[in-house]
Length: 103
Image (cartoon, rainbow, N blue to C red; front, side, top):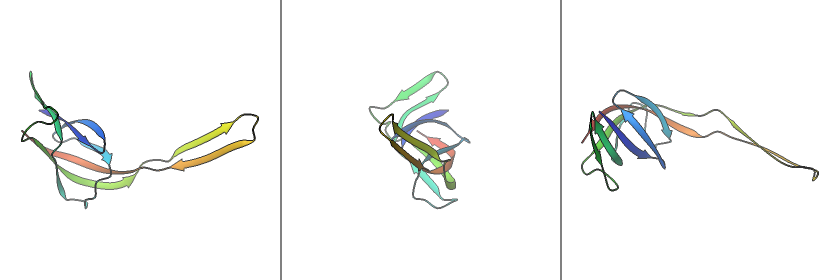
């Protein structure tokens, strides 16, 4: 059984027992969270698609860790104009482990 969830402005296909890194969620490590924005649920040949969300469906997950991704380097330059700009960015993430798909 799998589900397509929406969190942090992105969509993820998740399966029970899977770990994934999503946009930061304000939760403590070890805390169980419920993701209620489920767009679709599939099992074998059957597929339930919501419009936009599947009624009564949810995904239970446990927060494994909080962290920051690797640094992304941003370099902007205009040739012959003596303009160079260097910048870096590290995005925060929450790593979760999907426990169960209800729906």
